[in-house]
Amino acid sequence: MSVSPSQAAQEPFNGALFAAQLESDCAALRLPLDHRRIDLLLNYLAQMLRWNRTYNLTAIRDPDQMLLHHITDSLAVVPELAQRLAGKSASLLDVGSGGGLPGVVLAICYPEWQVRCVDAVEKKTAFVTHVAGMLRLPNLSAVHGRVEELEPLQCDIVISRAFASLHDFAALAGRHVREGGWLAAMKGHPPEDEMQSLKDQGIWRVEGVTTLYVPRLSARRCLVWMDRVGNEAPEQ
Image (cartoon, rainbow, N blue to C red):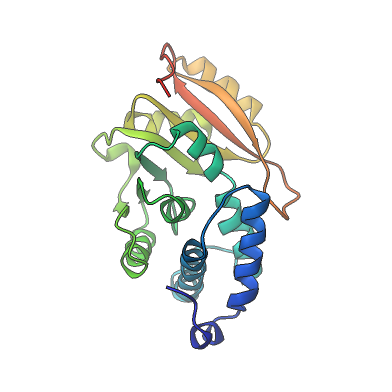
């Protein structure tokens, strides 16, 4: 699955240079990915660039910025999820996934995680399905629809990236979290107003806020963890 010289020539980025950058980013995140995983991430980026010309998967067009703001930004949550799951196989749902962020990145990094990406825009879930087939990721699937209309999926972690407020995220997607599982919202600054609104809801609570470090990115990032009010933490 390597980005070949001919393939790289068709894309507006240097495969070897981008591979070196990803390896550096992963080292900074203490995320040990082998060369095959790096190759898969680069092929995912190449496919996103191709499809973006026609289907407008993302407003970011520059490949360097896509690498940073999409791939590396998504990689930043992987160590935190892995720590929570403690090496266990798990089921994850990426809500409002768009072109598969962070869902595709999670599926590439951890083959033992079963990752579903759900989005209301069919062309975006079609892209994720295409990526799952092309990159041979049997642990990745896409669901076209509105998350609040799907049958409960009993996931260990339901994650979102710029999907909705904490209150709305919990109201729409909380039904898909198994007992003892978590909602995880990727945010910029800790959203104090949203956290208060969630507290007023009385069903879900903020269990913790993890500050994320994203290599080469000066903007703040955090991961807001939520569980049901009254839930005991599951045994690790």
